[in-house]
Image (tube, rainbow, N blue to C red; front, side, top):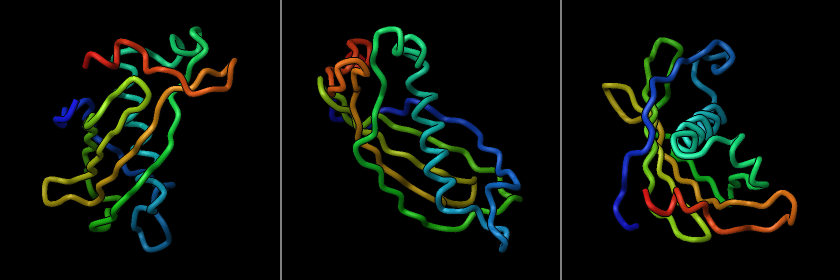
Length: 131
């Protein structure tokens, strides 16, 4: 797969525990939101429970975040996740956290799937190869 495909989009609530003393969303919160979006994408095809019954789990190998503009508790961001690459052994996702006015953060993750019994990286489940 070489084209970028939107695979998850959701409204995000900015909570009191997401902000710092200046009222700005903490940088680490964006990484949590990336995880929420990644899980929303995965759950559309195979739940974590189903994976665990097959002794596999998604794993992260790399995460990047590029902070563009601050968010506050008053903002109403939307998160988007695109699948940009999937192969037998890994996947790549791009993320965007934005309001109607601007993009606040973009990101990238690379990962794969891991067998929790053999403790080895394994092939991506077939369902993800056909997205």
